Image (cartoon, rainbow over the protein chains, first blue to last red):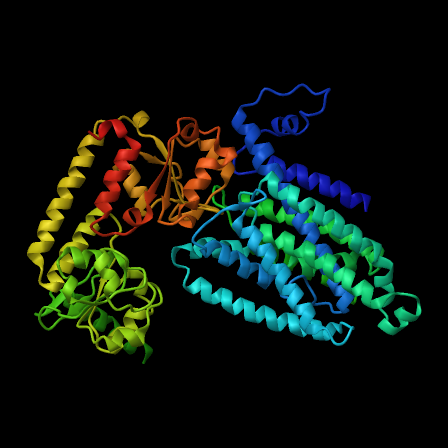
Length: 333
Length: 300
């Protein structure tokens, strides 16, 4: 765990130090630590300070938060559904967000709510609404059978995705912007987004971590867990709400970044085992590191142009995961 | 056996190559170099792109246009014409039902749509201009295809005079007097017009330099690269309505752009996306507008 923390620090440092503009490491370091009282504020041009502190740093931190959120939510869903293919998109959250964002792009007016653009706000609303709809549809009496939930999520997701596709066709010259959003990315991330996302991730992560032991017990059998004193339905609902809220917020800023939520938890499970008390926090850290590095790659490889980070996550992540799978030769789930 | 087939194939190619330069009577060559067969001046013309619609109306063929795309909104009379669907995805059924005797297509239709239309024996004329000279050429070609050579010649002459006036004004500018221009097509993600785009050509023709001459086509760029290259003028392509103005509003209000020369001098402008991106007669308007924005002092 400590190792991962150090790795996270190193990733943040590396990601802040490299970019399409070459800035000496010493300058970046000086800028990053200039708030410390015993360090002389370096004499750097205003532009470089803006690049490091207002463009790269918020982007790196947002990337880390989104990566952490998606990986943690993925680990939670996989544990809850006892299904290795479960990921944050299974409940229609991403499709709902995508539809919300697309509508935001196409509305004939723009505006800001709490300092945020129309697109992320509608994306968040869309994600939460579709998740709520799926829960309502999947409820059988007072229980929430997991298979019913997945089926409802997949069906509603497909329905929403079809509307998005239709809107894309009629979107005219906005098509490019929407497509890039759908592929996910952190272009133009700013501190305002970090400020909004941070509390969600912290609260969500806390709530999920509190239930890691019951989640372990539920891996065997829901009835057995019930007999061991776990309030199964309460655990399910709390975890679902926490994971969904975190996912929807993350997706609303970053667009639909696939792959992180499904693969990072499995990679962590392969290396450190299936105990949720470790799996959840480690997935958080690994997800953050993975997405920060992927985004650094996305914005530097074809500089000065950028590619959507969603393209990079699967392209570099999948081979790495396959390598782990061969190396460890262990059953994944 | 295989060798023989190759020889035959080569012969066929040779013969068809010989046949190309001399079009048969009643045939004209479009901008892709394809021969198009026409029986007399076309009376029912369908336009498959907004720029082609603008050219056809400018040539006085408005009455003969029987179909346009959903995006054809200029001149306003074009809005009353029957629609054939989107630009890249026209409705073939509707198109055929209009029984056109000339379809004016765009290069993007070459791979899928044009072969489909030709299989139905519909004459398709493809317009594919890449620079201002080819825009003029496309007007001449379309004039020839529709029997409006005189109108085309007059239109092209007028455009040439206006283009000449702009080049004359910027001719004496030194490289230092040509401002670095960031052209914004969309702001989130930040999307700029590199080489080979109409915006890029208009910027250099109007005495400016594109901030990203190293990019090809429309590309997303890093905000940090923009700050590093420090644009002196920012021009956002925008349309009507508030959401379409979003790129301009963003450029004007984005705090991280405050340090650029463009923001410090208040040189953030918006330009009608249609006049800088449609290769039709109005491209000259775009050029004149660009000159007005880049060199207000030269424009008297």
